[in-house]
Length: 170
Image (cartoon, rainbow, N blue to C red; front, side, top):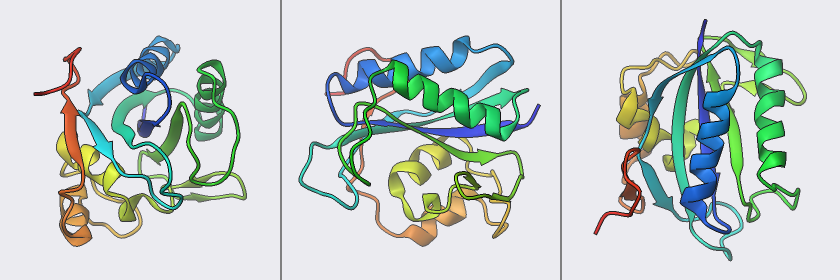
């Protein structure tokens, strides 16, 4: 079973509760084993900035699903949790992205793996480098730790929750 990396984010409603519900729904799916869950980070919006801050994290699972099937499952979880289509980079109650799927490289109209923009996004790289710094990007062959160093300062991300905490850090 290949490991799959799923980015999780929310900036509407009870963000931590919604993100944790998404993790629970992903854990409950048959054919998956949760390997790692990052801390949760408060992050400023990218693109459209006139919206609330996001809460972001990363989950790594082993999966027996195909990439297409896993992608459909995470879109169904978004729907179950109340995600409504708005505009690109707009506010959302939940956002689940298939970031990596083993060392697969896939470029289709509606599914690109690795996710094409994740190496430029601190809100994905920081939590991913936290839980799997030596994971190698299948295209550029750099580790997540090295990609994070290349990104530059990331002090705009605030570690807000450890995976096991129910309350934010003081």
